[in-house]
View (tube, one colour):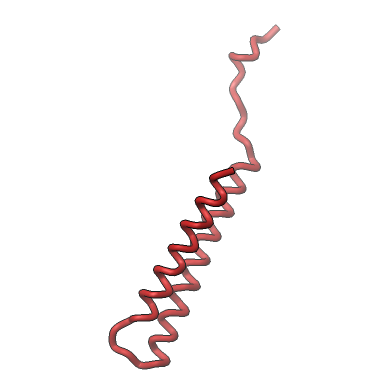
Length: 73
């Protein structure tokens, strides 16, 4: 009979998929924020990329809130 403590644990696929999905969500959210800020700055015609910075920081704040909320469980 095999000792249960000697068996290797298999990785939990649900946890792996959950964090892979969170990483994909982070990339998409940040990409949308940067793209929207870039296009808005182009449309207004300002030299300094104000909206690119604002939307990027806003996307990062949303991402941090989402990570804290998801990992707290």
